[in-house]
Length: 337
Image (cartoon, rainbow, N blue to C red):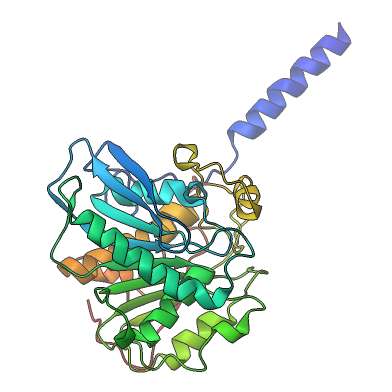
């Protein structure tokens, strides 16, 4: 009887302790990063080979006549879009078309010197495909781009060489943990030819042991002719449970609906990823605001300027702020909202 009473007491104590644990913020219903969507479904199709191919994601239910276009460039070996699936689904259900260039066959093929060429070809082909009757039509407005890891470096190189390519110039880009690792020969010495009228966010994680922040700082410091740029740093926070991490793959948010069956290195890393406030109050919020600021001149105070709205990752369940983002501004910026 004593044993039973002791076990019962411990169970009650543990339940009481666990029920009082400080929890992470939940996703907002409305606003940038929120879960209020225009569409219920996503049409997902694959086109072409790694040299010229892409995955296409279109909003559906209801199917719109037209939508804004986002190009999403994956990190090295993250060619299975399942890795970023929840983020992609969020973007599409908000009313966007997402083009996801393949540019890699596997972790070794092709060599990185082909990455820009194959990415550009995929974007060209995707835009041609979207011009057929079967698809949601792109809106007559600038495209926007997201690039994670090596994908961020690809975007930076495309912008530095902008005059060479026959694709629409983006209005905004977001580089997430951009870098090339040991493949430094891919990088340019400077990024001072990035067009002046592009809005750019560069987001790094403080505990990134894969590429660090070297390349991110290089782009931010040398893109001096592009005034509307912010460098944003995310930190770990163990105040509540589960704790918030700050590694290279914090933007991973897997969704099995977009699993292509190619289960390489990044797929294995994505299996350990968490869907948390760094996603919906961090990357998602920032990009939604960046796109809205660029296309509609709204929510610029969330995208730029080192404002409380930009820095916030939400509140723990007891009202304590999650460790906020750190924002570095250029010496001068045209963004004042």
